[in-house]
Length: 73
Image 1: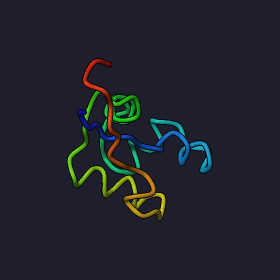
Image 2: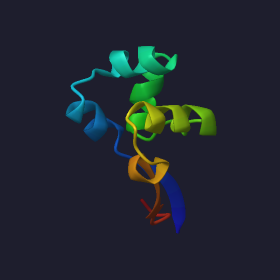
Image 3: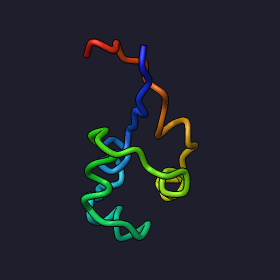
Image 4: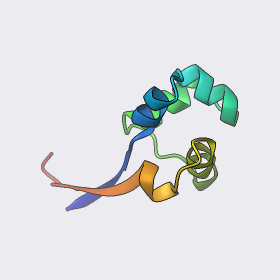
């Protein structure tokens, strides 16, 4: 089994009626960075992940989690 970093960024953005660009501007990264984190193609640095959670006034564990996947997937 492998592990990936799952996230609920899109859920938090929807709840706050924010676009990817809005969130990117708020934490000082590009829209593409937010997009690639959301779909799991990019693992954010600890600093970026904490900035995202802090922006939504959420616990890190509520936004991000380790997800086990079958190595065959």
